[in-house]
Length: 254
View (cartoon, one colour):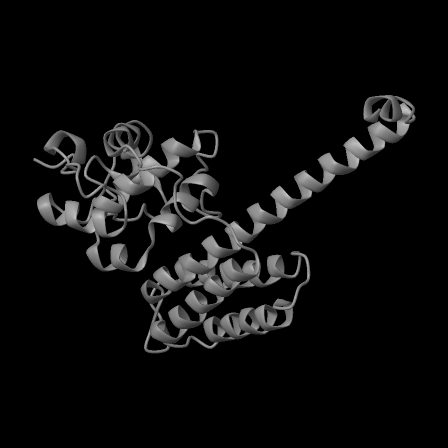
C-alpha cells in the first residue's frame, strides 16, 4: 500500500525533497568544519601567544601579527555559525580575546580566555575530539618521516632540510612545555586544515585514521621510552593491555 501511494508522488517533488536533504547535510558538514577550525585557531593562540609577547612587549613581530590575525578570524567566523543560546556569550568572549591580544595582555590571561572560548565553542557546536579507534603509532611514524620530516626534521626538532628557507620556522615538536599545552585533537586539526600564513599545508586528503595516527605520533615526540607510553595511555592512545613503546627507528631517535 505504501509503495502504491509513494508511486503517485510527482517525481519533481521527490527530487526536491532529496535536494533539500542533501543541501541540509552539506550545510551541517560545513558548519561542523567551521566550528572545528575556530577551535583550532583558538588553541593556536592559547599555545603560541607566549612566544610572541612577554611582559607587554612584542618578542616576535611576525608571530604577534599572526596571533592578532587568528583572534580576529576566530571572532569573524563565530559570526558565520548558526545562532543559538550561546551566540551572544561566544561573541563577547571572542571580542575579549581580540582586545587582550591587541593590548598585549599576559600569556596566562590570553591562554585562559582562548581555552575557555574553545571549550564553549565545542559545547555549543559539538564535534568529536577523539578518534573512533586506537591510532596505529607505527603508521604515524611512517607518515611523519614521509610527509613532515623535510620541514620538522627526522626527530621533530624543527630542523629539517627545508626549515632554513621557511618563515615562520617549523615548530619544534620536541618542546616539552609546548607539547603539554597542545592537545592531540589540536594536532589532528593542524594536520587536517594546515595553518594559514605559514608553510604548514593541509593533509586533509589523507584518510582520517592516518591523520589521527600522525597526530598521536607527533604528540609522543617530546617524550621518551616508558614515560611516553604512560603518557599516551593517559591520553587513551594505547590499551592498557598492549605495548606501545616506540622503537628508535619509529621515533627517529638513536
